[in-house]
Length: 202
Image 1 (spheres, helix red, strand yellow):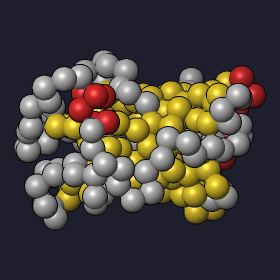
Image 2 (cartoon, rainbow, N blue to C red):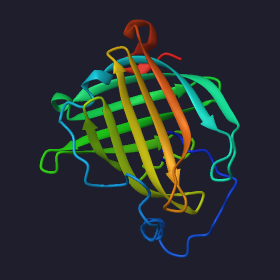
Image 3 (tube, rainbow, N blue to C red):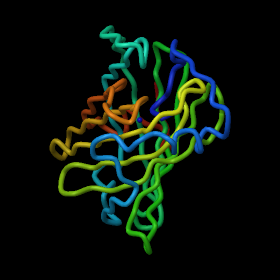
Image 4 (cartoon, rainbow, N blue to C red):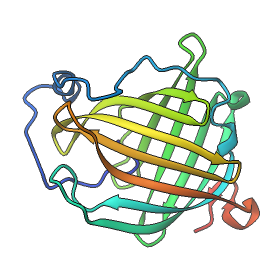
Protein backbone atom coordinates (compact mmCIF):
# COMPACT_ATOMS: atom_id res chain seq x y z
CA UNK A 1 0.00 0.00 0.00
CA UNK A 2 5.90 5.10 -1.00
CA UNK A 3 4.71 7.18 -2.06
CA UNK A 4 2.50 4.16 -1.32
CA UNK A 5 3.98 4.88 -1.06
CA UNK A 6 0.68 3.40 -0.05
CA UNK A 7 -0.81 6.74 -0.30
CA UNK A 8 1.69 9.12 0.86
CA UNK A 9 0.22 12.09 2.57
CA UNK A 10 2.26 15.26 2.80
CA UNK A 11 4.85 15.37 5.56
CA UNK A 12 5.22 18.46 7.70
CA UNK A 13 9.01 18.21 7.56
CA UNK A 14 10.50 19.53 4.32
CA UNK A 15 14.06 19.62 3.05
CA UNK A 16 14.72 20.90 -0.47
CA UNK A 17 16.45 18.48 -2.80
CA UNK A 18 19.01 20.31 -4.98
CA UNK A 19 19.18 17.62 -7.69
CA UNK A 20 16.79 14.93 -8.86
CA UNK A 21 14.93 13.14 -6.08
CA UNK A 22 16.49 9.80 -6.98
CA UNK A 23 19.98 11.29 -6.98
CA UNK A 24 19.33 12.89 -3.60
CA UNK A 25 18.10 9.67 -2.05
CA UNK A 26 21.10 7.81 -3.45
CA UNK A 27 23.41 9.96 -1.33
CA UNK A 28 21.85 8.56 1.84
CA UNK A 29 23.58 5.58 3.50
CA UNK A 30 21.67 2.31 3.27
CA UNK A 31 19.61 1.79 6.42
CA UNK A 32 19.48 -1.67 8.07
CA UNK A 33 18.34 -4.38 5.68
CA UNK A 34 18.16 -2.12 2.63
CA UNK A 35 18.83 -3.87 -0.67
CA UNK A 36 17.53 -3.68 -4.23
CA UNK A 37 18.82 -7.19 -4.99
CA UNK A 38 16.20 -9.19 -3.09
CA UNK A 39 14.45 -11.74 -5.31
CA UNK A 40 11.23 -13.75 -5.13
CA UNK A 41 8.97 -16.13 -6.99
CA UNK A 42 6.66 -15.51 -9.92
CA UNK A 43 3.63 -16.52 -7.84
CA UNK A 44 4.37 -14.48 -4.71
CA UNK A 45 1.17 -12.44 -4.96
CA UNK A 46 -1.28 -15.11 -6.08
CA UNK A 47 -2.66 -15.40 -2.54
CA UNK A 48 -3.76 -11.75 -2.69
CA UNK A 49 -6.20 -12.19 -5.58
CA UNK A 50 -9.81 -11.29 -4.78
CA UNK A 51 -11.46 -8.92 -2.35
CA UNK A 52 -10.22 -7.65 1.00
CA UNK A 53 -11.49 -5.50 3.84
CA UNK A 54 -8.70 -3.63 5.55
CA UNK A 55 -8.00 -1.41 8.52
CA UNK A 56 -5.42 1.26 7.77
CA UNK A 57 -3.17 2.97 10.33
CA UNK A 58 -1.31 6.05 9.06
CA UNK A 59 1.11 8.20 11.03
CA UNK A 60 -0.33 11.71 11.16
CA UNK A 61 3.04 13.44 10.68
CA UNK A 62 6.07 11.67 9.20
CA UNK A 63 9.72 12.29 9.92
CA UNK A 64 9.15 14.42 13.03
CA UNK A 65 8.99 11.80 15.77
CA UNK A 66 5.19 11.77 15.94
CA UNK A 67 3.35 8.92 17.69
CA UNK A 68 -0.18 9.97 16.65
CA UNK A 69 -1.95 7.62 14.27
CA UNK A 70 -5.05 7.94 12.10
CA UNK A 71 -7.12 4.76 11.70
CA UNK A 72 -9.64 4.26 8.88
CA UNK A 73 -11.20 1.48 6.74
CA UNK A 74 -10.67 0.56 3.10
CA UNK A 75 -11.71 -2.04 0.55
CA UNK A 76 -9.26 -3.56 -1.94
CA UNK A 77 -9.84 -5.74 -5.01
CA UNK A 78 -6.94 -7.44 -6.81
CA UNK A 79 -6.81 -9.12 -10.22
CA UNK A 80 -3.87 -11.21 -11.51
CA UNK A 81 -2.75 -11.19 -15.15
CA UNK A 82 -0.21 -13.12 -17.26
CA UNK A 83 -0.44 -16.23 -15.06
CA UNK A 84 0.02 -14.16 -11.91
CA UNK A 85 3.21 -12.40 -13.02
CA UNK A 86 1.35 -9.08 -13.21
CA UNK A 87 -1.23 -7.95 -10.66
CA UNK A 88 -3.37 -4.85 -10.38
CA UNK A 89 -5.48 -3.72 -7.46
CA UNK A 90 -7.63 -0.75 -6.58
CA UNK A 91 -8.15 0.34 -3.00
CA UNK A 92 -10.79 2.82 -1.87
CA UNK A 93 -10.84 4.76 1.38
CA UNK A 94 -14.51 5.70 1.82
CA UNK A 95 -14.00 7.99 4.82
CA UNK A 96 -11.14 9.86 3.13
CA UNK A 97 -12.56 10.55 -0.32
CA UNK A 98 -9.61 9.18 -2.28
CA UNK A 99 -8.36 5.91 -3.71
CA UNK A 100 -5.21 4.26 -4.98
CA UNK A 101 -4.04 1.80 -7.61
CA UNK A 102 -1.15 -0.66 -7.35
CA UNK A 103 0.59 -2.34 -10.28
CA UNK A 104 3.06 -5.17 -9.71
CA UNK A 105 5.16 -6.93 -12.34
CA UNK A 106 7.60 -9.81 -12.08
CA UNK A 107 10.86 -9.66 -14.02
CA UNK A 108 11.59 -13.24 -15.09
CA UNK A 109 15.28 -12.60 -15.71
CA UNK A 110 15.93 -10.80 -12.41
CA UNK A 111 13.42 -12.95 -10.47
CA UNK A 112 12.24 -9.75 -8.87
CA UNK A 113 9.00 -7.84 -8.35
CA UNK A 114 8.54 -4.14 -9.02
CA UNK A 115 5.65 -2.37 -7.30
CA UNK A 116 4.22 0.92 -8.58
CA UNK A 117 1.63 3.10 -6.83
CA UNK A 118 -0.80 5.72 -8.17
CA UNK A 119 -2.68 8.01 -5.79
CA UNK A 120 -6.01 9.30 -7.06
CA UNK A 121 -5.23 12.78 -5.73
CA UNK A 122 -2.17 13.18 -8.01
CA UNK A 123 -2.51 10.59 -10.81
CA UNK A 124 1.28 10.12 -10.84
CA UNK A 125 2.97 6.75 -11.33
CA UNK A 126 5.39 6.67 -8.40
CA UNK A 127 8.94 5.30 -8.53
CA UNK A 128 8.77 1.55 -7.80
CA UNK A 129 10.09 -0.48 -4.92
CA UNK A 130 11.67 -3.84 -5.84
CA UNK A 131 12.07 -7.18 -4.10
CA UNK A 132 10.26 -10.41 -3.38
CA UNK A 133 9.11 -12.92 -0.79
CA UNK A 134 11.17 -15.31 1.29
CA UNK A 135 8.56 -17.65 2.69
CA UNK A 136 5.70 -15.67 4.21
CA UNK A 137 7.64 -12.36 4.41
CA UNK A 138 8.04 -10.05 1.45
CA UNK A 139 10.37 -7.04 1.46
CA UNK A 140 10.67 -4.36 -1.20
CA UNK A 141 13.01 -1.36 -1.27
CA UNK A 142 13.54 1.81 -3.25
CA UNK A 143 14.38 5.51 -3.22
CA UNK A 144 12.03 8.44 -3.26
CA UNK A 145 11.36 11.91 -1.90
CA UNK A 146 8.81 12.69 0.81
CA UNK A 147 7.60 16.24 0.19
CA UNK A 148 11.01 17.04 -1.39
CA UNK A 149 12.89 15.27 1.39
CA UNK A 150 15.01 12.32 0.13
CA UNK A 151 14.13 8.97 1.68
CA UNK A 152 14.92 5.30 1.42
CA UNK A 153 11.68 3.29 1.31
CA UNK A 154 10.73 -0.15 2.60
CA UNK A 155 7.53 -2.16 2.07
CA UNK A 156 6.89 -5.29 4.07
CA UNK A 157 4.21 -7.86 3.28
CA UNK A 158 3.34 -10.66 5.68
CA UNK A 159 1.14 -13.58 4.62
CA UNK A 160 -0.43 -14.28 8.00
CA UNK A 161 -2.59 -17.06 6.55
CA UNK A 162 -4.78 -17.58 3.50
CA UNK A 163 -7.37 -15.07 4.74
CA UNK A 164 -5.20 -12.50 6.55
CA UNK A 165 -2.29 -10.33 5.46
CA UNK A 166 -0.38 -7.33 6.77
CA UNK A 167 1.45 -4.57 4.92
CA UNK A 168 3.63 -1.77 6.25
CA UNK A 169 5.58 1.13 4.82
CA UNK A 170 8.66 2.69 6.39
CA UNK A 171 10.94 5.58 5.40
CA UNK A 172 14.52 6.30 6.39
CA UNK A 173 15.39 9.99 6.30
CA UNK A 174 18.96 9.63 7.60
CA UNK A 175 20.09 6.26 6.27
CA UNK A 176 20.38 4.90 9.82
CA UNK A 177 16.90 4.16 11.21
CA UNK A 178 13.49 3.28 9.77
CA UNK A 179 10.28 5.04 10.73
CA UNK A 180 7.16 2.98 10.06
CA UNK A 181 4.52 5.45 8.87
CA UNK A 182 1.73 3.27 7.48
CA UNK A 183 0.38 -0.20 8.24
CA UNK A 184 -2.62 -2.13 6.94
CA UNK A 185 -4.29 -5.29 8.22
CA UNK A 186 -6.22 -7.25 5.58
CA UNK A 187 -9.05 -9.75 6.00
CA UNK A 188 -10.31 -11.67 2.97
CA UNK A 189 -13.82 -10.62 1.91
CA UNK A 190 -16.52 -12.20 -0.19
CA UNK A 191 -15.73 -11.02 -3.70
CA UNK A 192 -19.37 -10.56 -4.69
CA UNK A 193 -20.06 -8.23 -1.77
CA UNK A 194 -16.74 -6.34 -1.83
CA UNK A 195 -16.04 -6.00 -5.56
CA UNK A 196 -17.82 -5.24 -8.81
CA UNK A 197 -15.97 -5.87 -12.07
CA UNK A 198 -12.71 -6.24 -10.14
CA UNK A 199 -13.12 -2.86 -8.41
CA UNK A 200 -14.24 -2.02 -4.86
CA UNK A 201 -17.94 -1.40 -4.40
CA UNK A 202 -17.34 1.15 -1.61
